[in-house]
Image 1 (cartoon, rainbow, N blue to C red):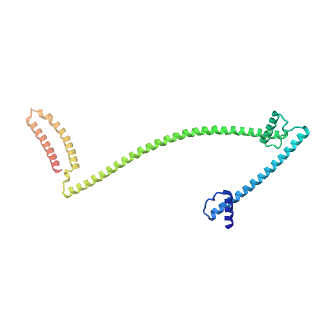
Image 2 (image 1 turned 180 degrees about the vertical axis):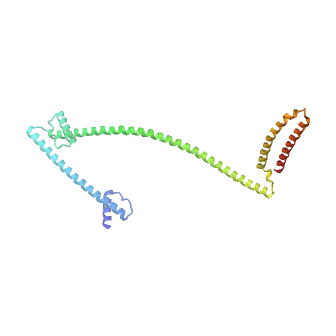
Image 3 (image 1 turned 90 degrees about the vertical axis):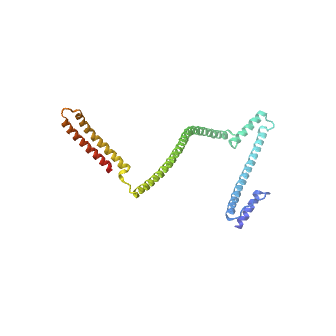
Length: 273
């Protein structure tokens, strides 16, 4: 643990340099994390240092090779960079720039052609990939448009459903309030009816004067009146008889007795009820 803390402190000091190292909570977890970061940082620094050394070595090799080629040109052909015209120098500079862009080791045709072929192949692959991406983009844009339309339709349906649900909820609440009122009123009327029935029972009320009994009596009276109508029609022919007063008188008396009997029965029924 102490070795890790020393390693971490050393690494933080190197990272922040002259700046003050921020305070942090020293515990097993933070020390382990910082120790791993320190190891990773040192490994990357070591790899970077090796890469820098390799690049320096290659640069030295290129410089040596360039100096050698310059000596060869100067000794064999008698050409130097100062003796070249501006167009030739520009061409050479462009050739060098192209070689550096293509990443070739020299400016020979054998080095340029494979590099150009590779770039052409990469260009064709990039164009092919670009066309494929354009097709996918068009398909995605079409799907996106359809999705947006569907989303708008669904949102509209949701809004309508929410409004309808709010209306139905208000109606349901109103119905519940009405149902509660009706239930309470029914209970109140039922209690009042029970109290009234108890009062009527306690007062020994005659059931013949109840509403139901009166309705039944009215129906019976109506039936009796219907039975009297044919009898009255039977008496009508005898009202104009004159040749046999005695016989007519007998018939009239019989009819009167029948009528009196019916009236008496009707009165008895009324009194009984």
